Structures are given as structure tokens and as C-alpha cells.
Image 1: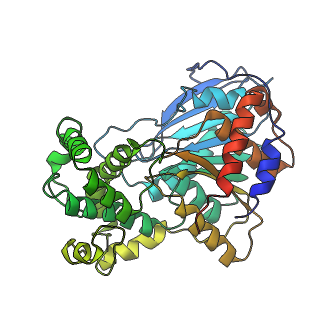
Image 2: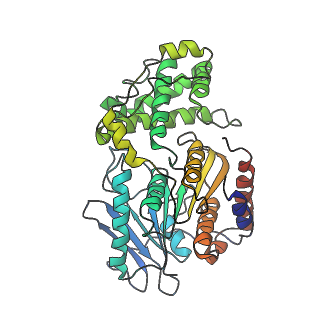
Image 3: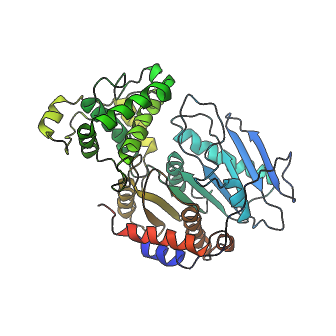
Length: 414
């Protein structure tokens, strides 16, 4: 993969002290004294804009694209805290950057609409601060990682560079099939546990997910180890070899996406997008029996045609840094491999840096890994490392991030 060694060398140079304590400022207008402002776009999307005081603002902007949200949830600003509790608007302002994010106009599948809301947000920022930022960086996680990659390909004139974390950037169609395959295989090995199937989810499944179906899935997985082993082997979903209980986490996570994304995606794509009619599943105790007995589905032509708008091309003209855990069970690391192949086929790999992280879990990054990835992006855009990052990462945090990235290089599947 391209430029991994350069990343390893860059982050080996970074180090210093701890993180800021989270805070939030509300204001009617963002002035030279700094502050945050909330509002609503004409599309209905909520937005948040924060600008540091003039004495600390470097006049650059970080725009944040959040991940997938269940369609039955109310609109809200999402994913604003990292796993360790660090509040993103505070962290980004502490680095000297302005911060902006949006809820998107709708939950569920919102990649195309979210992309437009992000573009509108950039214009909203200029209206709020009555200025144009020197550099505009776009960073997204999971679904927002695909939004980031699509916008870096399709609207490079708007953004100086992008950071895409754990997104389905290689092939959205393959991601849809990955979710569908797992539900189909689960129904084969664990029949009649969850109502519906891979292409239809009854409303009660979403309504009673936490109270009824999570306990049922937990019981099935823990009491039928042989069946769950075949499920994981034939789906090729990631789990942590050192923590066998991660098989349950992977299963619950993937079935959650089946429960909360299937019907919504069908409605928005104009048809059923999952197709396994000629798939050969392998990895079970009896693959012939599995392939004879598993349910088969054909995608609707309209849905397949509409999915093309969600596919990346690999054509980049501005820097894009991607970060992905090798053991991601929800959005597999092979998405990075597929995207790397697209960029190679497009003919110019100079704008892509991919950072694998040797860890299990979806978007399971430390704050140091996120900050160092952002630092690599800024270095690619400006030619210099952002000085603020060195004030927020201890030498031990930087070394740990360096080690996990370096160790992951040798585990990348092809």
C-alpha cells in the first residue's frame, strides 16, 4: 500500500503533553472572541460552527462528517466525542482550527444528501464568520468516511484535503452485500431467531431490538459455539483472536445494521439492493449443504442502478488520508484494499496515504491515532506538521500509535 512508510516516519517525530478538558461555548454570533453557534440549514439539517478566539485561530477550518444513525432516531449532531470522552469541537479548536459539523437532513442512508449538506455547511461557515478559511479540511467517520472520499473526488475545489476513517470507500455495493450475506448466513445457522430476513425487517425488530433480540442473539451465540464458528468462518467477519467474546460483539454489530439499515436502504434506493443469487459461500463444516440450503436473493435493477452514485472512482487530485483498523468487523479492512486498487487504476497514487491500525473493532482508534492521522494530512497539504498536535499527544501515546500502525503493515490482506 502506498506511503505507509512515510506515515510511520512522520508520526515517529510527534510527541508532547496531554489533552484539553472538554467545554462548550454557545453564542449568538461568532466574533473575534471565539465561540460556537448552532443553526438549521434550509434542508432541515442541524449545524454547529465553532471558531477559536482570533489570537489562537490559524484561519483554517475542519469540517466533520458523522457516521450512520438509525432511521428511527431524531435528528441531532452526532459522534462529537471520541472513545476516551474527548470532545471534538474543543479538541479541534485547541489545535487552532475552526470546527463545523452537520446532522445531515435525514438519518439512515444519507450519503448523497449528507454530501450536499456538508457542501452547504462550508458556505454557512463563510456566512457566519464573514470570511473564507485559508484551508478547509474534511474529516469523516464510517458513513462519513465515504462522504469524505466522495467529496474529495467530486468537489476537490472546496476542500484542501480529506481524512476518511473506517469508511466503505472501496465499494458500497460490496458493503451492502456484506451486511446481507451475514444476515442470510445467520438465518441459516440460527433459523427463526430474528423475524424477517436479509431483505425485509418487520417493524417490531427495530422497536424491540435491545429488549428482545439482543438477549436472544446473545443466548444463541453463547450456547451454540459450533454454529457461530461456522457463521464467522463463512462470512469472513473479523474478530479478536485474543478475545473470543468479540465474536458476539461482531455478530451483534452486523445484525444491528441488518435490522436498522435494510428497509431504509430499500426505500431510498428504489428497490432491494442485496444480491447473492450466484454467491458461493465457503468456510462452513459442509459448504455444499450450506450453498444448497441458504436463502437466495436477486437485487432489483433500479436499486443497482441507483447504487452507482455511491461508488468511488479512485480519482484524486487533493490529499486523502485514510485510517482503518485491520480487525474491523462492520466495515471490513478490505474496503481499503479495494480503494487502493481503484486509485492505482486511475493512474495517480500520489494523493493517497492509507494508515492501517492493528486493532479489533469498528472505528476503534485512540485520540492519538486520530490526531496523528490529521497531522499527516496537514503535512501533505501545507508541507509542515501542525504545531498544535505536539501539544496534545504525549510521547508514549505517539509511540503506541506508531507501533500499531507499523505492526499492521505486515498483516494487510490482498
